[in-house]
Length: 475
Image (tube, rainbow, N blue to C red; front, side, top):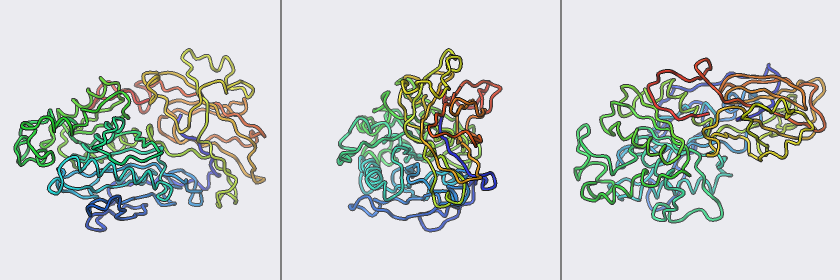
């Protein structure tokens, strides 16, 4: 169960805008991304000019298009955010160097962070800057329009290392990595995207294209301030793998098996270390992939990244009543927030009448929708049926209008009852669908949704008999 939204009549529906390669340089260190509103050079620190980030947010038309609610729909107050950390060997690179600008077209904001380089300050200056930027974003989330409950950190190459270090070390409370934690508010990272970044510097040795990892002039040695062979303690200290534990957020790793710079063996090493610790992880091996390139943002890679994001930071749920008033954001009822939830391992829910309006569903576990039960470590290996329940009061609807429920994503099969009456079903992992409920709303409403995340070789997406990458169960 992911998201629920009630939509206006079909005539106001808009097609989803997919942004792939329509990018061009706007400034020395920014991108002009179609459908994005850019705020440049937001300062998160004062000790170095590099301590700033650019914020790209989907504009109102893009958000409405993604939501399928038409250009007059109400824009959500908080947008899910991907914090992007660029690569460049910790000594070069810039904010415009990112693998995921297409996320704007899918309703995600991107904060692209700059940080101090190793020629100016050695480690841990880089991770301190990244954490300072994250702290600033959380502290000013209201002004920035960001939903801090839906934040992922991502990066490529050196940025992938730093993103992974943020995600793995956050719950270790390393004061040297973040000396000024945000008081009175917990910073929560819901996932990590690592594009071909090294996670274990202690294990990273040998020769790359044009350099030797262990030489004093290598990018790793310059970042650490010494060769990993001379100071293995520094290599371990700066390695994300050092801080892995079962409470870390899910991780998606993308790495080319022909990478000439960050050797591929580091990717399965990171993946298996995560899995052994009980962390949900997915390794995507890019066949023939080098160190970056178009193959990391092609259609297949985009789909894999979006699948991961929709599970860990899905867009908000919204119930919209159609009519003229909706253009002003009125007569709408958010359905995200408090629901109740129950597993149904023996498929007894329908037989026992869990869908009935008078069934005491309040006895089940409280959850917050958007919700992904497989992120809960108690249920991460569970495959089968589960139920979600939501109650709300009367909704004023203009006379002569139709009412719909819109589900933005339910993995994989779903059946829906409103006030004890079956209203429809859907099959499809990450495809939105609508069910008309005109005439079925009451003064007190009960919505029951049965979800079945079972999938096999007949489903789309489905299990494959042969795949070029390893994957955890991402139900």
